[in-house]
Image 1 (cartoon, rainbow, N blue to C red):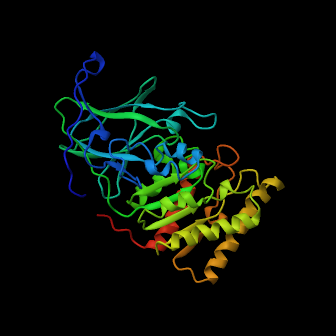
Image 2: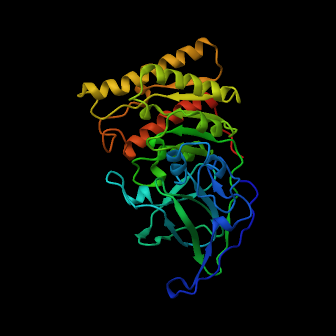
Image 3: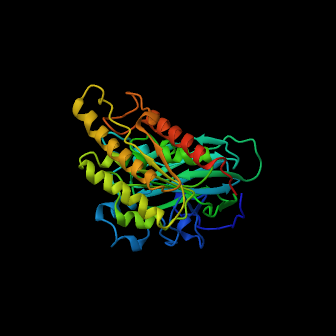
Length: 364
């Protein structure tokens, strides 16, 4: 693990309930600490996935969704065996098809930096301030590393990590490794994982041990030039384009042309591998002709674009098909959004393809 810089922040709060705790604010650090973030220029207000300068360049819906913290995480080290996380969010806690623990919750893992991840379950409460409390059973003496995933479908106003007074605590600087960058839909953003750690992009990040930048925008993954401009700014090890679930109502030719344009736009800047991902389908598609056609025609248009690009000898272009995704009929929460089971299936398909494309992934 790279050099760690101690960031001593916060102070004991005078309120009796929190009197014996020291609170550490990641936004008070003088260096970037938010993991899986494509843009670290907004030091002090990093609870966003696109930088401020993107606001006039992308549609309002995309900008608003970029203020939700899907995929963002904090890594820290502490010798404390009791931890608390408290924060406030900008929107409602839950959705009809997605629980508050996924929409607005956090998820804490211990990590040894060598691929071993241990989930830390907690007591939690959702009030004006959301609070998670962890009792850590750990025989190890000294500092232990933790990874805290932030909410998938909510914006965060502020957040602090608390440790008992006298405990050591340090935020780990944001990784400088080249990430996998995912541009996609609500499914990429995390709908409908039960908790942040079960979003498929976060499963990929833990498994491959490299940063994964989540640029999934619910209902708004539409292969737009303005968004792709910002994606192209990120020096990635792999671009994953997974937008078909937001395009089934478009004519075939529109899907085809947008896919061509998206690949050409990225390829004009980088020779980084690009993975095109088909629509995973709908849970009732085998029994509903209309739903079958909606996803199938979308995938046929993407497949045609892929063939055209391969005929043009566009290098480092790869493909992940509907059949390779292989969702089970019970892999969905509703007609299109995966459950934790579906998230795991999606992650495993992407991981398998990424390993084929990239080979062994070396981490710093």
